Image 1 (tube, rainbow, N blue to C red):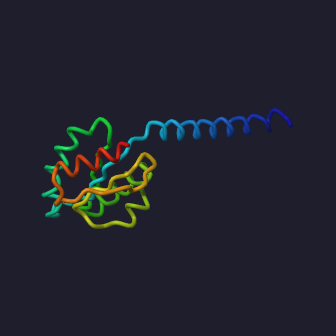
Image 2: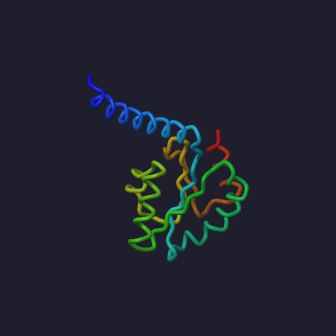
Image 3: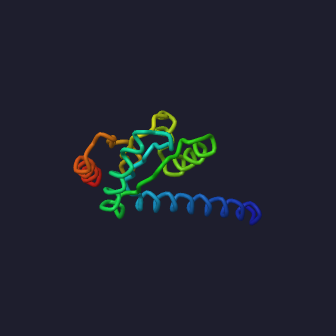
Length: 132
């Protein structure tokens, strides 16, 4: 092979290795997530948010708390981008109900949920389980 042929291959291989290394690092640093499906007009959201704020104060250093806003098309589009970036786009696409929290493990799989009728203690127990 000529040097002209090798140089583009070397660049492509370097880019591929960098992309793979970035994915491996991101996966190693991934934390479980608590994803609130929310809207300003949602009554259940108004019930769950104060409890969620309480448990976030306790678990925020170990679990990523994310709010997906479904208020309008622009906020839904932004929420979709977050879901895509964080690796739970299929969950986002399958759910349009608001007022609940999906609990996702480090791999982005749903392993539980929090509901507005749960007590703070019940939420804490579910989050403890998520960390195991």
